[in-house]
Amino acid sequence: MRTKQFKAESKKLMDMMINSIYTHKEIFLRELISNASDALDKLYFRSLTDENVGMNREDFRIDITVDKENRLLTIADNGVGMTAEELDKNLGTIAKSGSLEFKKDNETGEDVDVIGQFGVGFYSAFMVADKVTVESRAYGSDEANRWVSSGIDGYGIEPCEKESVGTVVTLHIKEDSEDEKYGEFLDSYRISSLVKKYSDYIRYPIIMDMETSRLKEGVDTSAEDYKYSPDDYETVTEPRTLNSMIPLWKKNKSEITPEEYNGFYKDNFMDYEEPLAVVHSKTEGAATFNALLYIPAHAPWDFYTKNYEKGLNLYSKGVMISEKCADLLPDYFSFVKGLVDSEDLSLNISREMLQHDRQLQVIARTVEKKIKAELSKLLQNEREKYEKFWNAFGTQIKFGVYNDYGAHKDVLQDLLMFVSSNEDKLMTLQEYVDRMPEDQKAIYYACGETKEKIDMLPQADAVKEKGFELLYFTDQVDEFAIKMLMNYAEKPFANVCADELDLATDEEKEELKKENEDAKDIFETMKNALGGAVNAVRFTSKLKKHPVCITSEGGISLEMEKVLGQMPGAEDVKAQLVMEINASHPIADTVREAADDEDRLGKLAKLLYAEARMIEGMQVDDPVEIAELINELIVG
Image (cartoon, rainbow, N blue to C red; front, side, top):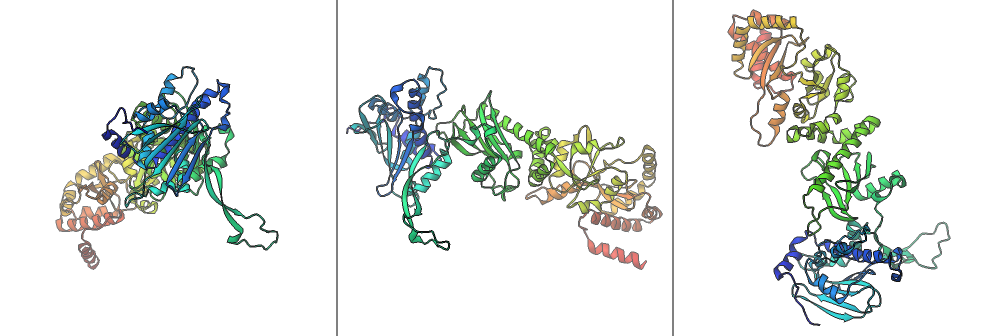
């Protein structure tokens, strides 16, 4: 056999293609099976107009054979085959695609769905093989030819014997090395798993002999108490179809039972629990694709860690292109599992990644809308399921509102839920607004570690005594998200622990303003005694039974200060604090009476500030000093 050099490309390009284009060596099997499927497609298409083909759809197949002893892996098909000239043209010229030529030549208007486009997939075989042999007999030809290559040194073509039409690709698998265990591709179960992973939905049966255990003939098991022993079994080799062939997502929804949907989810996404919802759709238009999406019932153990990988399985014409295509899901819907199968994606040369084109963006936008619609439907019609979803993934939705400077708030705001003071259960913002009294100006919320601790806040009492509903923010992200949202249904959000809380009448405001004017020297003395811990001291009318509270003014609240302070490498972000004294509490009279006693005002300021910090769940800066002041007060 005379060795020929590869026609179009250099030794460097061949080396790059084998070692750089493909990320995972296991991809070679997907590529060779896809090529075999293309060959079957071509002959099947011809059979529709040429009765001499003499084959029905069910006659077409792909056979895989493993010869572990001789380190041979064979992929055979009974498709259209190739002549010597076609072997030379298709396999001797890197990046020459017979499938692409076929698509160009087909002018019948029929929908011919062939997979290969670039012609480089075949050469991925050299990632795992040190020698590749292709024996092929073309349909309509009495002659067969053999193509042989050991890689970059070139190839040879010679006549050979082959009884039937089709192509047989034989790989001599490389010897194992310290770094690479090529022998894994001679394991039948490993090959079976790769077929299931990448080629499960190839439309023709992929058949391989597999070892299985069965009872020996003649074993008498008629006795009721018969116990099987290992000697009762024998190991036999039987042909097995490895692939499903018909994708679940390409069936009509009316043909699929809930058990089939749930079984597919559990088998493919390794979950022990059934999903909360299933979205099965076919979209046509700017991008044509099928989608099968699942909303899980619980978060995986690593969901809120940096190790979690989002993404949907991506198929092109039933062949898996990417196990987790992150570009198809926005971060705030990263919990969704499922797949997208598109027939018109623009693939790159290795068929592993997508070119970032308009089609992918259109698909991603449509997927986002479908997920949002399904969640809205759950919220509307299956409240219990939605609340289960919210308890698992609500934090992610709130992060979605906060991230990207609130760019996605309009998409997500109607999905938000918080526990309310009125019924002590989750409610949406729309439900809150619908129940607001006419005289209520804002959506009130308070932040804290737990609902119980929030209820202890003096400001929370004031809001609830007015008959207004209070939302409990117990997640660290809650207030950050709401700050991005700013308002809902034209109602602003108001933190009850901030100076923006406004519950007084105009008359009460005027009276309080006069009291604060009269006491401004007292408050200046108290502020100075606290050494810059607060921006201001003043009387307030929003407290009922409590003597004092701390509020914040400006963009950073007390709770935001706590959260930011816990972040690694965070800057020293501080809220601008105000100490507010209940103008109608007896303690206010004590403060007024000490107007001319600077020392006493200073001690009162420190005691009241410490009390307010403790109520807020904050640390007291100098507990020893406070203890001494209390003792002094007790002793008199």
